[in-house]
Amino acid sequence: MKAGNPLYQRRRAPTPGELQAIPWLQALTADERERAAADIRIALAEVGETVCRSGRPVTYWFGVVDGLLKMSIDNAQGQTTTLIGIPPGGWFGEGTALKREAYRYNIHALRKTMVAGLHVDTFHWLLDHSIGFNRFIMNQLNERLGQFIAARESDRLNNPEVRVARSLAALCNPVLYPGVGEILRITQQELAYIVGLSRQRANIALQLLQARGLIHVEYGGLRVLNMAGLQSQI
DNA sequence: TCATTAAATTGTT
DNA sequence: AACAATTTAATGA
Image 1 (tube, rainbow, N blue to C red):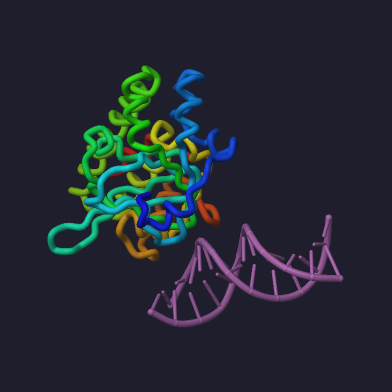
Image 2 (cartoon, helix red, strand yellow):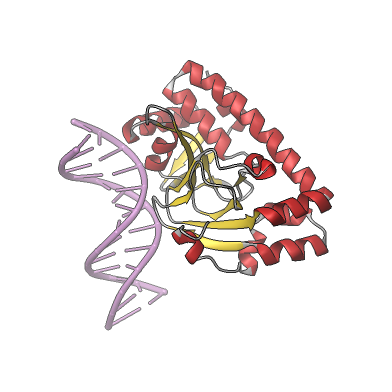
């Protein structure tokens, strides 16, 4: 959200309900929370809109209040690889914010998404002053490490059903994405974008996973019935 | 609140 | 990629 970014122009203060949807605020003391909340800004990203771009200096630490984002990287050959989808409750970019480096990925909105941003200076103030915040960040980094290890594992297998299963398990991770409730709100088209499949193939994979009793497919979303089963798909 | 209509999503070829 | 069927959201009485 820099000056040139349209999101920056549309940013505003958060409502109480939106603050409620920011998980790490709960880990702070009242004083810390007051200071952090005063610095949070909210903006609505339209479909396809860029939230942050690789190479730009980190000015905000971002999170999803509601909606769905995708994180992707462009390689030297100009191809784009989608790494993860980010559902409600997800905050990302601690690594680069910590080191005050440039973003190493692109973030785009897969649908209309309410994005929250904390200025990187306040992020560092919290790191320097709040034990609860440090615990949250450490927990988050650890959880994400587990996800990337699982993702690498399934990349080698390259089986569509497995990749869909692992992606769904990742998207429903309650530690990283506490805003995702009983049902994960995601269309089959959005899931296809994240996994890198056609919608038809994503549809087939979902039906198969449902037939195995691991998920229940619904209109505009799905319900995970067996998380461990999803993660152990081969 | 209910019926009608438009838009979004899904199932299938 | 295209089409039909289904589901939800929006509209207005």
